[in-house]
Length: 114
Image (tube, rainbow, N blue to C red):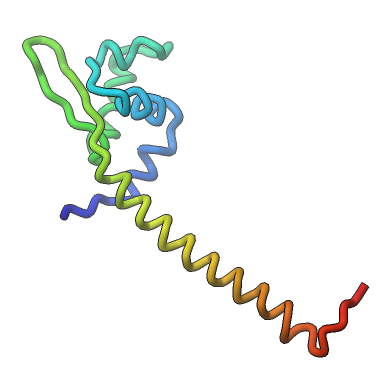
């Protein structure tokens, strides 16, 4: 299984235009023109966003004649999801330990300070 560079994935996801492009591609393949249509920017500017998504492994391109089509590649998102799950488990465990500390050791005898 290929592990993607989550730094590149996070960097690609940091931009709202790129997130919108990925949201559109989640519904299926689209041409570059279709992807550019909702944005008030030039086609070269959209192409730069697509290149960043492609470099992060989130997008694949294919050519059919003169038309360039893009589709979403979800595997880098799986790597990010796994990383987030590990961070969540760590922090939830740490917060549970802190709550336990305050509930027991920081308050011996069980009296409440009000």
